[in-house]
Each structure stands twice: as structure tokens, then as C-alpha cells.
Amino acid sequence: MKLCSITFSYFFTSPSPFSSSHSWPFMASTDRSNLSNPNNVIDVEVSMAECHARIKIRCRKFPKQLRKIVSGLHSLRLTVLHLNVSTAHEIALYSFTLKVEEDCGLCSEEEISRGVYQLLCRIQEEAFSV
Image (tube, rainbow, N blue to C red):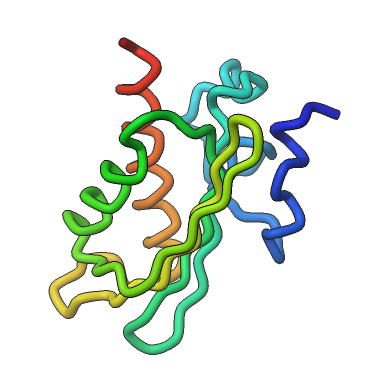
């Protein structure tokens, strides 16, 4: 088993439909030929309580990634209240507690998961296309 597929895997309580380490029907538009590449590891798990969301993200780490994620979350109208970061080898694990702003267009766990997953895909594409 590849290191990237097991690093921090215990951190996720349930399989996410927005995970590049598994085949899920929600990923029909994703190019599955790249999913076995360790550069493309992205797992997102979201839980919500009222106007707060807890997001767990596992992905390959690279310079300035956290700044881009926080900026992207802000653009989605998700305000960071708390952040925890752990790393192992080339994998980063981010845990966010967020306030979902009233004008946020993402209302459910699934919508937030999809939005954050798309954000991370764009960030990784930019990082690895250089």
C-alpha cells in the first residue's frame, strides 16, 4: 500500500464522496487516470452544526498552500475560526472550524465538500503546472 494512501487515513471517520483516493460516482467529471498519482491525493470531510462547519482535508503539501486554502475559503464566504495543521512526509492534514457566513452560497455538507474539493484541485493544478 502506498504511503500517501494510508497517511492520516485514520483521521477520516467515513468515506467522502470528494476523495481522490477512492472511486466515487460524484467524481464523474474528474480525470480518473490521474488519481493513482500521489500528487493528486485530496480527501475532504465536512460536518456541520448550525452555521458552523468542521472540515478535514488531507492532501499533498507544497509551499504557500495553506495561504491559498485560507484565501479560497474566505472567497467561498467561509470564515476560519480555528485551524490545526499536521504533516507527515509529503502529506498535509488540515482541520478547520469555520463559520458559514449568511451570504455563503454553500448550505449543506455536500455543497461545502464539493466547493472545497474543487478549490483544492485548482490549487494543486496551479502548483504542479509550474
